[in-house]
Image (cartoon, rainbow, N blue to C red; front, side, top):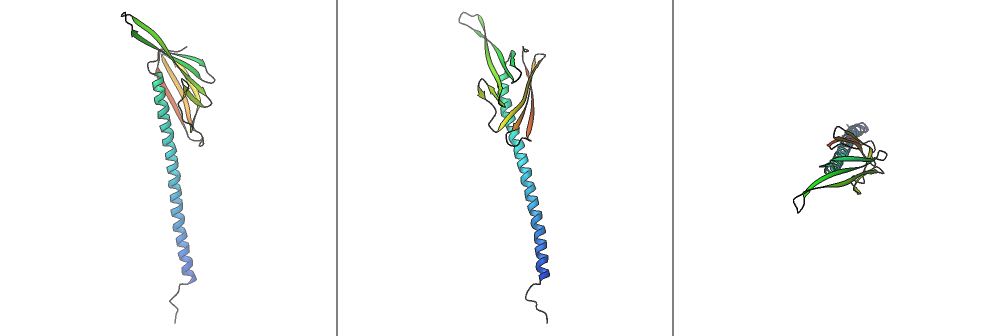
Length: 162
């Protein structure tokens, strides 16, 4: 007569082997999904940072008549915006307003105000003036995850440069 009340060692080992295969599959799937989610989240964060920087630069360059480069290394320049107003006597009065762009310590400043957040740094900024246009190029890079970068190329219509 056979003892059928317990399980044999072979059955226990078979259950353990199958359970380990299933658990390894679940673990590898979960870890790969978490890594993919982290990559997507980091890419989204850097895109959002680029949008914020670009919006501020668009406001900086709006109605710019002239760009005057002060320094190439580190990049520093001023934009001149000409304003026409009519005074009390009815005469048209021209005034110039200047705004300053400054790149220092991997950060962009506009009129002394930092425009990129602490988590991101700006690298390799370059400004070229061609045919009444200013081409601004730079790279946004995450501070900790330096392999995550986004190249930015902007073209603004200006009155030329000097």
